[in-house]
Length: 182
Image 1 (cartoon, rainbow, N blue to C red):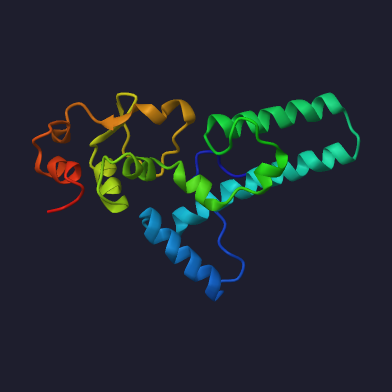
Image 2 (image 1 turned 120 degrees about the vertical axis):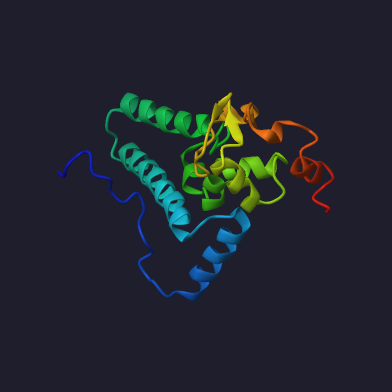
């Protein structure tokens, strides 16, 4: 085990570096979600891979007929965690965890939620608003575009109080309200 204060890589790179179809799909997702680089995409893929691994472990525990109460509790914990984080619906099962796509994880990023709620004209502008400190979640300023929004925080995404964007007469707000026309 290494030094606990040292940062470690939170993503895995693709096994095949020059696979054309994968590269084209990654470029499409980076453009669609306004990501800074593919590393952000790989982080989302790694967390999704971990959830799928936990679901496969649950299925293996079920088939090996170990303690059924323990298996049911672990399954409830996993599905509850994914529901609270907004990645799955309320009546989801283990098969739904295995069917999740990377888009599910990317939709829960603050950057995407700001764009989808109409607080910015594009994903890139949403990223800029967040990094410049114009966006708040529950009254607390968040400056990390990759912050994962929990289901309970969805309705609390607004402009930050002291930000000039809170005024409806701000030129950028007028552009956003008009539908992005200049």
